[in-house]
Amino acid sequence: MKAVYTKPISLTETANSYCPGCGHGLVHRLVAEVIDELGVRERTIGIAPVGCAVFAYDYFNFDVTEAPHGRPPAVATAIKRCLPDRIVFTYQGDGDLASIGTNEIIHAANRGENITVIFINNAVYGMTGGQMAPTTLEGMKTTTTTKGRDVKVAGHPLRVSELLSSIEGAVYIERVTVIDPANVIKAKKAIKKAFQNQIDKKGFSFVEVLSPCPINWGLKPLDALKFIKEKMMEYFKLGVIKDSTNSKESK
Amino acid sequence: MNKTGKKIFINGNEAIAEAAIIAGCRFYAGYPITPQNQIPEYMSWRMPEAGGVFIQAESELAAINMVFGASLTGTRAMTSSSSPGISLKQEGISYMAGCELPGVIVNMQRGGPGLGNIQGSQADYFQATKGGGHGDYRMPVLAPSTIPEAIEHVMTAFDLADMYRTPVMLLSDGILGQMMEAVEFPVYKSKKKLPEKDWILDGAKNRKPRSVFSLMMQNPTILEKHNYKLAEKYKKMETEVIHETYLAEDAEILVCAYGIMGRICRGAIDMARKEGVKAGLFRPVTVWPFASEVVSKLGKKAKKVLVVELNLGQMVEDIRLAVEDNKKISFFGKPGGAVATKEEIFAKIKELIK
Image (cartoon, rainbow over all chains, first blue to last red):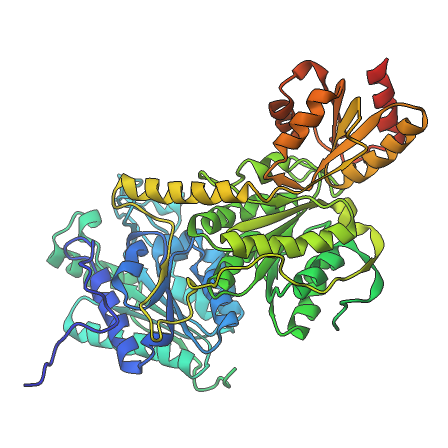
């Protein structure tokens, strides 16, 4: 009998610590499936962020390092430059990548580092208990915007993918979500392309995943998925934001 | 071009960069800040020539975190900066200490606090020797007083870093960075039997996956155990004391100074000896670990102890702890970027014997 659904080799047996309805587990699995399918597990080095995914090194069954908050792109840059034939990716949340680490992500993209970035956008600081993130929607209540995000005071939600798309060194940027099977399949396709680009030496590839955080949003898991569909996807449009993969020479 | 074995005239910054290359450093990331700019400038062409990686980082934070990343792969890695930039690097230094990653950080100190000025200074002694970054960690700190010594101890720094899996700082200053001396680069040979790097991340091929982290949240005993393990290592690191004395055995006035001031104080001691004043020098080369026992012995024998630094008095606290006799200890400092001359120091010595 053929098994049609098994645990990817690139995931460990460790039960994850993510909350019910959280998107991280799903995205971890997609990354692991892609690494298995590309056959690169034994030469992959992942960089975990500070935030909910900090324990990624317990869940991924390949080499993983911690990095200070926001610094994964700098750490990844050095690893990739020292070991150019390894597959190096960062896995970062919106506090890590879009707030404290904006400098690092912009300049890694600008140098055209041949790395893969998985960016989890759940519009909130998860691990610290639900404070406003740069990606928090207008009017959205968090523990530091108890009356809802006031854009006059806190600014508008930051569209990081669009911001990075103006950078010459970034070759592929796509925004996806994991709210239903059709979108999960699309998300996996995007993640696979972002890794394949690295194997093909195409350059900086970036996948933003709109991901649910029901606990910190104060919503039931199904309502959290609805929130992404009705609210987040209104502001953060899904799709390929930049793709110059085919026009880029291998570097 | 390999400079080993040739006598050349070179400034301190470039000498430090070349010494790092000779010691096998194959990754450098840095950010421009005066007075250490010749280090990244030199590395920008010399490192690729040596087959290594040079990156002009977007920030001091990125530079130290790139060293963190390069170190993970087993590559000998270095960054350099000057005081305000070193403040920014403290985050990465603390993480390297927590994750037990080797690396060399060069601080060509300038005046502070804040932007201060770009003159030479020794105002970062506390920051370098008492922590700097957050958390309970120790880091070897080497303070050379001449360019040949800087060359030697860049090499020592890489060895200590690999020996103990720790960040190591070369604490120098803008004066040594900018001045030129005739030097001969030695052939590098590690004085230590260095452990195999069986912890690096290079892909889990034919082995179990590895992870590098400093977060130990599951329960308090795990972090406690980790910190006790680090403490054991720090105890071993404490044996790596390097110091120099000059006419100190019979000294009635013991002058204590390190780095560039250690060199200038030698001149003041020669002046004193010419006039029959029994002055001598204690000069720590490692300012952590600190040669407390040596200075304790010499200080107890001496009638007076004079500590000279280019700051408001920082190493003087370590001298006080070692000598345990506050009454006999005096301090002479220059906190603004000017260098104390040997004449000024000699005048201070004469004042003490009155």
